Length: 392
Image 1 (tube, rainbow, N blue to C red):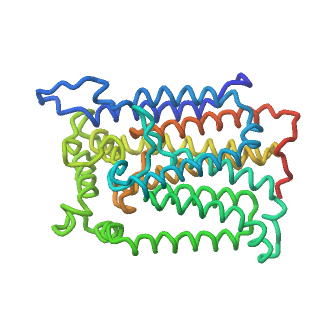
Image 2: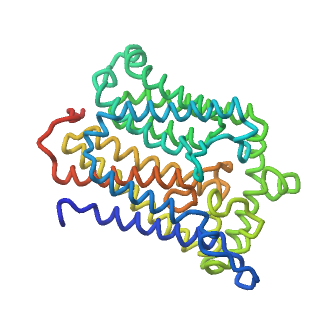
Image 3: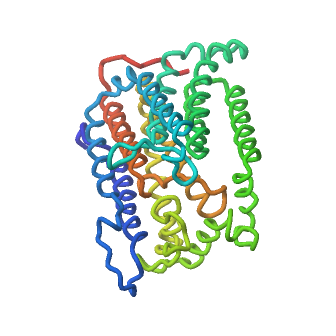
C-alpha cells in the first residue's frame, strides 16, 4: 500500500456512509411515486450536496496538515469554539425572538448559510482534551487523589463547565452529552485514575438526570418513552417516536423500497435529519439498518485501531485524538439511532455522515481528514518527537 495513501477500510466505510446519506436525504424529501408533484433535485436535497462538497474539500485540506500543528493549536481552537458559543449565548439572551428555531438558539447566521458552533466544538473539545493530557500527563497520573483533583482534573473540568453552561443555555443537551462523554473517555485513555473517571461519570449522569427532571418538557419525553403511541402522548411528547416506530414496523425485514416510505409525508418530523434512521428502517428494512450499523462499526473500529497504532509509536496526542473521534462518532450514532427506536429520549442529533446538516457534516469530515492524517503518520512515523510521551 502507498505509504501516503489513506487507510482503505476507513475510506470505504466513510464512502459507504456518505453514499447512504446522499441517497436517503434525497429519498426523505421525495413524494410518493403516485404523487403529481415533481420537485427539483436541489429542492429535495436541501443543500446537502453543497455541505458534502465543502466537507470533502476540508477533509483533503486536513490531510495536508501535520498532526503536530493541531497539537500546537489545540488550546487556541478550543478558545475559538468557546467564543462562538458565547456569540450564540448573546444571541439567545439578547435577540431570542429573532433567532429562535425549534425552541432553541443554536446557529449563527452567515448570509445564506448558518453555522452551529456546537458541532465544531465536538472536534475542538477533543483537540483540547488530547492536548491537555500531553501537557499535563504528570498531573493526571498523580496517585494522590486530592492533588489529582486539584491540579489535574480541575483545570479541564473548569473549561468543560463553561462549555456545558453555554450549550445548556441554547439549550442543547444532546451535544452536551456527546462532548462531555467523549472528553471523559479521552482523559481515561490518557491515564487518569479510574476512580476519578468513575466519579466523573457519576457526576455527569446525575447532572443529566437533574436537567431532565427539572425541565417539564424533557421529563414528559422520558415518560412518553415507554408508551409513545398512548393517547396522552401520541399527539404530544410521543408524536415523533410513535411515528418513527410505525415507520420501522412498516419497513419490516426488507423495507418498502427507496422513495416509497410514507412516514416522511407529514407523519414524521424532520425525516431528513433527526429521524433519518427511521426513514432508513422503513425504506430499507431491518437488513438495511444492519448494513448501516455495520458501516459505523467498521469506521469506529478503525478509528480506535489507528489510535492504538499511533500510541504504539509513542504519538500520544495523535492516538488520543483518533480514539476520541471514534468515541464521538459512536456516541452520536448511538444516541440518534436510540432516539429513533425508543431506547433513549428523542434528541436533536444528526446521524453522522448521513443526516442533512451542514455544520455537522463539515465538522465530521474535518475530523475524518485529521484521522486519516494520523493513520498516515503512524504508519510512517516521523523522526520528530513533538507530542510523544511515555504512556504508562
